Length: 447
Image (tube, rainbow, N blue to C red; front, side, top):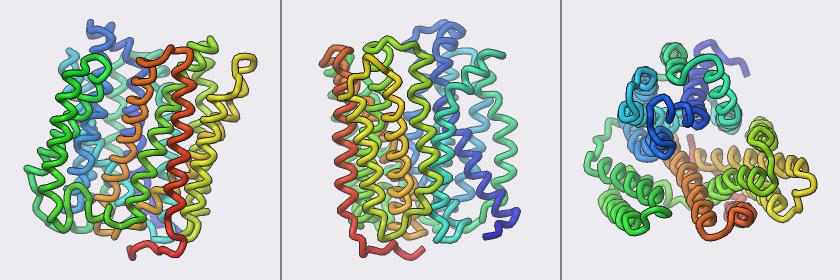
């Protein structure tokens, strides 16, 4: 297929914007000790720089998806990218931690529009038979950028100061904004937005995140926050249930194929996140490896995700979705279980094929499951599908981290990582079993 220059620019702008927002999530972790010293704050306080970005993403994904469907995907995408770029400048000039945290929250709001609407925009550019490839590109970009993030951050800090971590986004963001003008300017539905529902959505997720963060330190306060979040979420569901196109995509969740894809995605991302938290502790605290060696042993995970993402979209078809997802989860589960059960103490290098197996399986599942999710939704609801896909990912990642936090509080550090790896194996296996429930005779809704 021959791509015109306009289509190349349109696809490139979506993928480049995705690089910016994913890199900004991964690049800051390595800079936290530097930020702590430069801004004269505690290490615990510096973590707010990461938490603010992630919280804004979770809180704004579904509202941005609804806004995109109402006003048009391109308009909201470009607005989010512009906000992200402007907030990057505010981060680079931050004189205090409070300023930096507020700017990072604004960055996360802008990033949520990119994350929610990226695949929906790709769907307007590529033909339906190429959507699997486009989702593969999306997964490839996320995997490679996530893998490169810590190294890029370390490289920048080696030659300059921490504000450049954010200042570099400014020229790149301007170039991507220019390329985004090539995206098709299709009109939105002009559907009115329910501001009360948006407020309930953001309040619910803010309270749930704050409660999860405080669960191990202040259980009573955490219980109150979690209860408030649950009540807000219940009120939101009651308000949205009668609507034809609700903020929480209840209409999409009524379709069995879409609902199974979302649940399987949450289970798989929970297992993956638990594994990625457990492995560094296992390798460093139990096996005594250095941080550099640990990083080298884990890096093949992201690289194998990138490899499998390049061919998973081409393998997927309406009849093969179930077994491809199940095969991916089986590989990921096998890798996690092997890392948990295998005696690595004598030869820690043997963890590398297990990590590669995990990455291969996760990439195969992610691309195929996301393809099924988007093709199960009408094109007019692609924004809502993208928002829910991102929400499933973030929910799973947050739950996986919470699982490991609870395990570290309940078991010695020598034992908890191996239990976490085993739990991750069970969860990813459950995701694979759920995926087998997809009917091979089902067909996606028309685009």
